[in-house]
Each structure stands twice: as C-alpha cells, then as structure tokens.
Image (cartoon, rainbow, N blue to C red; front, side, top):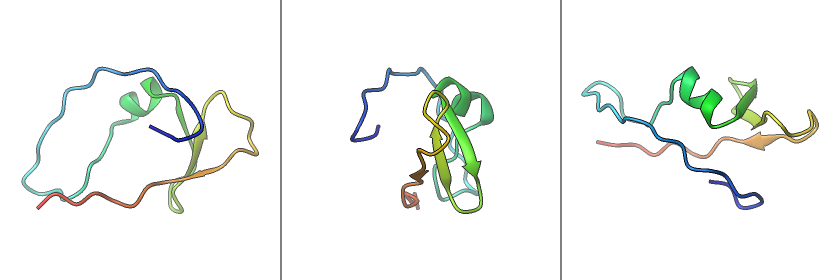
Length: 65
C-alpha cells in the first residue's frame, strides 16, 4: 500500500521461516504487485506503469522475532 495511489489486492501464500527475521517477497509476487526495482541495494523502486523519474524508497524492515 502506498499513500498516493490505489492498488488492487494480490493473493499470496505466506511462508514462515525460522531463519529469516524480515518479510521477503519473491520475484513472481513483485511482478504481480507491479513492482519495478530500479536499485535493489538502495531500496529504490517504482510501479512498472510509472515514469522512470518516479522513484520510491523501500519501507523500513518489519522484523519478526
């Protein structure tokens, strides 16, 4: 969910890992959400239908312990 745009729900099946502490998504889920990753290391992304100049920052990790 983002503040400046409506998004459609996407069905996904969550998996819980005893080794990971933050939420991760697969490349297929990112595609279904319409996410285009511009710079993975810096957490820069946009929706695939947005102009290349539109840059969004990843949210801070939600840690699950």
